[in-house]
Image 1 (spheres, rainbow, N blue to C red):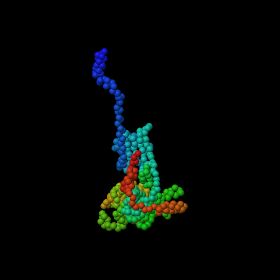
Image 2: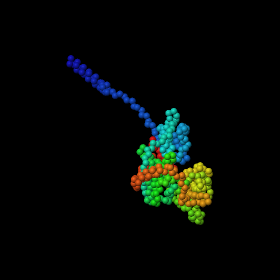
Image 3: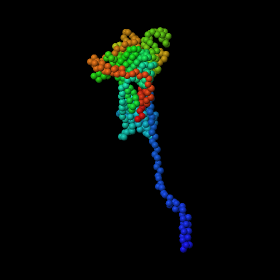
Image 4: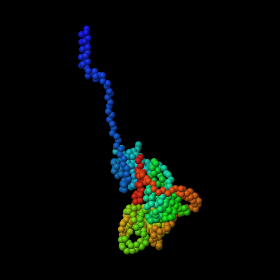
Length: 432
């Protein structure tokens, strides 16, 4: 019996010895097999931004940034009822976004506060809309003393150079910023500032301004009369706007004055019937007053020239242009401050400059920098009490604002409108 038990045990041990691998495999916990998911490739998103180049058309702009020509043409056709993309202007900004090579967004700055936005449509290839930017407007004072130039003074006060353009334009009838500005001249301005997402973007209207030049103060108030007309007036109710600007080129140097001089090319003394302003080639030239183009052409002495006829027998003369603005021809109606051409050195000239002259009837040529220009229609006497009240209230506020001297320069803002003299207005894109 004992032997039987031993045999059974021995047999059992033999079985155990034969099957250890199977038993281990059977006893090992089985983990469920997991399927490896195939990861989808991430979409390739590309963003482009830039400024419309001179001579650009919308098709070339889109194809240059990777859009198929057929897609570009369909986009133009879809946008046509909302905005004509043939009006694309050099210097204006745009942004472009593609996903896997397909256009997902196109934004074009129509104006500094207006955007054209194009995106894929539901029922059509593309849908377009014009959006006005939601600016927040604040009224703020800016004051200072001239240190160097108006540009430099405003930059030291933490302001943008555009404000210098605005002030120079506002005082263009009374102050010659080429010759009249003196150190220690003082200015103060109440101006609207426009903000977007908390960032200062641009200036709005100047509501009031004071400029003390060589001891004389020039005050200006923006006033809307009960009839709804808005204009700038002096404290006596005379309109700031006059028949002629003091100068067709702001912030330029006088290289030759009116009167007798030795001619730089011919070598003999003769009367100089105008004033020469030195300026880089391509600087825009503004018409000094409303009128009609009397002559436009080219000759050996004046080079490319324009003569404009104004009311009361006045004529303004512009010589040595590099080129005329498109559409300027004899008989064209011209508005004051309208660009008529660009500085050059054509004709009898030793370098890029503008010869500007002003003549009237039998008196002939006058010194354009000393003439007292007639003003426009003054404010109606019936509105004067209301105007005087507004004037006193506004300039009482000026007395409480200290003169600003030096502040840190504002950081460069990608939203800013980068406008400078001698360059076109350029609008920078927002990151939508």
